[in-house]
Image (tube, rainbow, N blue to C red; front, side, top):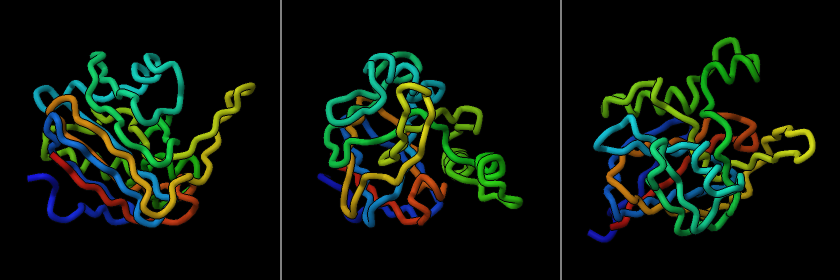
Amino acid sequence: MSAQETPGIIPPRSGVAFPLRRGQRLTVVDPQGEQVADLLAFCSADTAEVISSGRTLDYASRLFLSTGDAIYSNRSRILLRIVEDTVGRHDFLLTPCSADTFRIIYGDEHPHRGCFGNLAAALEPYGIGPDQIPVAFNVFMNVRVDGETGTLTVAPPLSRAGDHATFLAEDDLIIGLTACSALQSNNYAFKPIHYRIDD
């Protein structure tokens, strides 16, 4: 099979998990524009091995990753490679939004469970618990960093309708993927994320 017959659709403020075999390509699509997708990858053979923001950014020597860059695990192995990217601005600094995010930052009295809760629920059938969830690779998220003060600003995504990023699996993986639930990250509108898997 060359590609899945129909694209996967992640409704607004929700998440999914699925296997991705070595050599397959995962394409994450922003169908309407300005929508972030939190991406996690765990090694299928040992889910204690997971993507690592610290190691990846250390080895890349920069904050903003794009086509040609590798995403490393906490054991310094490459799990994913970015092989195509029509946006060129993603985030690998900020943790998945959560009920605590909405309580602490937005002051919500009855907060949504956020990407963290959505990822935890989607990954539970694979035996992956909440404490195993690391910093996600936040596809299309536009975090600006002030070089003098270090201040972080979450700006609207640069993605437009139909923009995408494609990742090549370098090992057999379990993927977690969301349509992000944080207002500021998505320019104050919640939209779906599409994805497809190609062999």
